Length: 242
Image 1 (cartoon, rainbow, N blue to C red):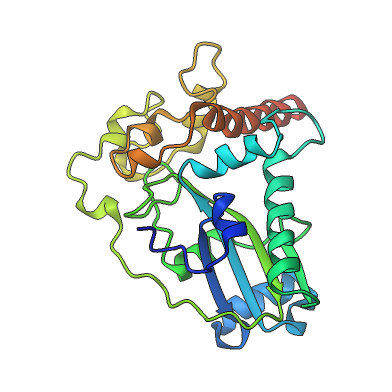
Image 2: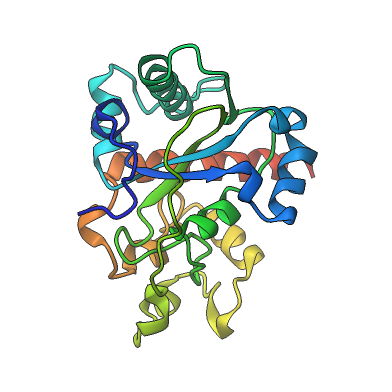
């Protein structure tokens, strides 16, 4: 059973958007409220903040069933478009007429990882992707919504980081770039290795796929290649501007 699936919505869950956290804005810490208000000036108009993510393989299956394709073309964002359309459908169906604003994906920059930590989904990993006991690293943040909904607030799920009990730390030794040695992530080692023509990590992350936690939830190969393909394209585009 997925402990992060807390909104009983077939619309969300059938689409693989099966990780939910509902925060009452008034109950957030002053630091988090200040972050939201600084980045989303209209946040004070709303009662709740809803974090929606996906874990496992169902999301990619639902994306394909919708007719969307994982294509890396300039100006096209099939993952974001599908996520926003699904969440909008959920809000229109379950909360008709409710004031809301989808702030991610969007123009605002909000620390989704910090909200993930508040929800109890996210623990830091050596390879710089969040991990948890249920999905391992195979989950992602898809939408953040400000809304005047009256959903039950979800208490933070409490579990230890799977990295704490991992004796082998296989992700560190598996990294072909040696970017995780010494317990610190070396971004430039990672980037320089990924840019090599024969790199094993151009469209994947060997350290990530070596992690033994949640392997049954690992994304399909095409989804992994899509996300890492987008990131290497951004890296190459940035390098050309240097």
